[in-house]
Amino acid sequence: AVPTAVMVATGKGAELGILIKGGEALQRIGGVTAVVLDKTGTITEGQPTVTDYVGAKAAPWPNREVLRLVASLERSSEHPVAEAIVRYAAEQSLVLSRAENFQAVTGQGASGWIDGISVLVGNEGLMAASGVATDELREEAERLAEAGKTPMFIAVDGRLAGLIAVADRIKPTSREAVKRMKRLGLQVAMLTGDHRRTAETVAAQAGIDRVVARVSPEGKVAEITRLQKEGATVAMVGDGINDAPALAQADVGIAVGAGTDIAIEASDVTLMRSDLRSAVTAIELSRRTMRTMK
Ligand code: ADP
Ligand code: MG
Image 1 (cartoon, protein in one colour):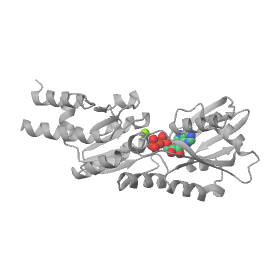
Image 2 (spheres, protein in one colour):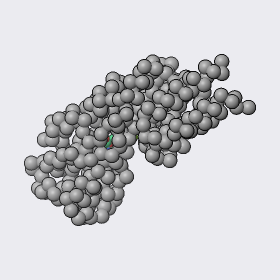
Image 3 (cartoon, helix red, strand yellow):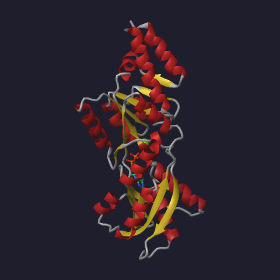
Image 4 (cartoon, protein in one colour):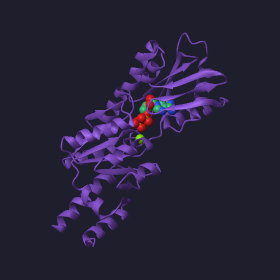
């Protein structure tokens, strides 16, 4: 039988918008020693907006046309940065074309054909893999990343055409949540597929000093496994499809509200409010319940 204290705590959690999948999960949460946080949509709002566009000097296309091409491509992507680019193009009243052979490159970008021209958008790694030289705009990209923005290179017809950057605000509650986690004696780290400098700036804003950037979904799993081998009991907090493997690998998976169904399914806890303070409350609730049962 489920102890009364566990039932009471699970009910209390539900009242606070913290859905815990069963008594066994509730008991595990309090034993966590490390919390790993996804960046986009977990620490930040997850609704980036375009802040900058820089055209390459030698590009034979006007900026407006490059923007139209990249937005036409991104219309086929479901990534939050893609949505930001499409919205930005709409604001400029650009008429988009249909993408052909659209391909998403997980954690890196996307490629496809627009009006018979090849278009590629994404991070430096994707450009390097496609043989596109980014030298002309690399310094600009670093500068944008240091400001906490996410820079993405655009190649048209195999040549560098421009650089577009998006910014995503940190949730106003994230910093306080991190402070409370540290006060509970927890190790706190951030994982992201984003640019290293962008990640470091956002982490500093949230008060996090351990950052692993440029990681793939599998890389997120590997980082959690590494912490577990070091002896940590790990909670992973994430919202996206790309977080599902890491949420499943962690000792406790915590899906952040309004997250994707796949993330929720892979988790032990779902936070109805998109607020990291709820994760802290879940840990405190579990610890308190376990104490009363002793
Ligand atoms: P996160 O871990 O922050 O959720 P992702 O792993 O989804 O990030 O993506 C990592 C990086 O890959 C993004 O910061 C971006 O630079 C690039 N990227 C991914 N998808 C796209 C896309 N559709 N268009 C442009 N860039 C993309
Ligand atoms: Mg995310």
